[in-house]
Figure: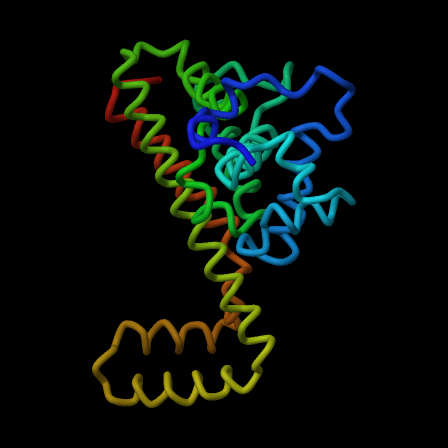
Length: 245
């Protein structure tokens, strides 16, 4: 087992084992952990579970990582690797570049629904740093100062993470309904009772419009479109606020 002093050392400051040919790589360990989280939830990611998936003993895994914090750091950095825009695909215009990074980030977060709430304390690694570099590079051709660039990057990140969290929550609600179809009928009855009180005229008008136009659809149908509309509006607003073309 590692000592307490070793446990506090950032994994990125320790070289990957190379004294003898390593049986596993950090990338392999990270992808294994992500696969477990995707299929069983983040709580299932333990040293014992990862070792079993790799076909190794738990103590063997400690040769490559020291603790759960190391695992979390590797998982986050592997996710950021998928977010990065590949070489040669980076748009020239700042609007397109910002939008591309935002869409890639949201897509990756939504594909790993546990990541938004479980990786907040991760030690930023090389891919996370490269992601931030790309975010700043997207604004390199503008007249923004570096403090303004960090502001814009934070604004976009907040929108993306918030939308991703909402999308993940909505998908979970849909899955919950699929597991218990009776909830739909109960919710409809309850909703109709509320609307019949006359206390919610706008919601009643919305429901009537949906029934008359046949636009009643599931909550996931418009999620991607709403994200794109919001992202475009946000980028336009940023451009107007900072005087960018």
